[in-house]
Length: 121
Picture 1 (spheres, helix red, strand yellow):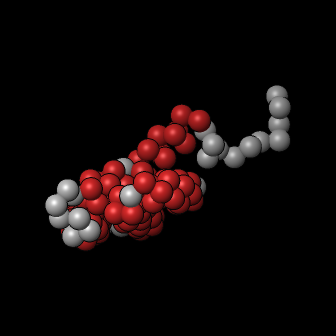
Picture 2 (cartoon, rainbow, N blue to C red):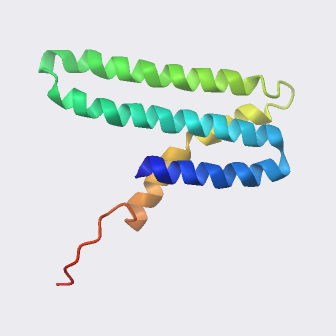
């Protein structure tokens, strides 16, 4: 659910940002997509992590963190070269990395991700 809402938010935010500045829109989308992919990978790895024996959990956590940090580094490195003078692309990519966190906070507060129950008791 978080991935769907994050991608929808990124599409709208990217379109709005593109209206003002193409570099900012590219940076925002680049960082946002990196954040969504990293979150998605982390969510998939949680299932595998729950099935691992206790002595392997620490190494699996480190491996997952290393993968996420590599995704973040690649996206921020690419965003830096969008605009090396004013760094608007890099700053927008940093903001884009937080889109998934913002969506999770909104979903947690509003409860939009909860299933509706037919009972009205």
